[in-house]
Picture 1 (cartoon, rainbow, N blue to C red):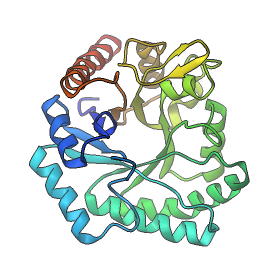
Picture 2: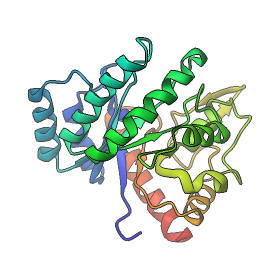
Picture 3: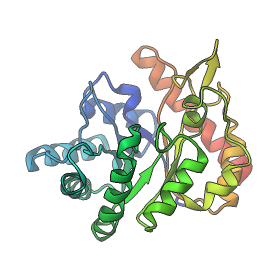
Length: 267
């Protein structure tokens, strides 16, 4: 684990432009970034132009960070063929950026579950050839629980498709009924990336906009169980407590130290 990557998503700065977010992430001490939506628009899309991709590469290089993961989106409503063609274009853009990871959120529409699985079965070999790993995280619906995530991996059955473990979302999307625990051991061998996200539940309402270490997630337990299962992939901080820019900067720097402390203590 000498080359363990702890990056940061651009979500904490989603009201800023992506380029400014990359600069702030670098200033907080992170060398890797995952590109999330800004003002509701994903920076990397299937319809991005060559000029847009070149601008993103320059922005990352100027900031001094590696854009190693990208949040993507599926287009399932038009059927399998349309979804496959669109997702292949997205994979091409991710590869063009130089990112090795494509983060996927699955789908919350039960009627589209089979379309989703067929899409992933068809695009996983294409992603592998492009040097891109698809990593699906818990986000409700088709990926609500550990069992759902394991079923997705079984259904797709390809090494380019694996799980992005998000402990905060396990709590959030089950409204606190499920917490990361011993079931991590079952999923760990299939986990390719980790999302560092906490969650609180107050008055029955879950909230992930909390700085890691200040909520319900036991990160030492999560890390230990993942490592015991062979996890060695990159990790990305997704959320911290809401606040003004300087406070977000401080919380991201704090989280960097917090997670380094966890990993050093657990091994």
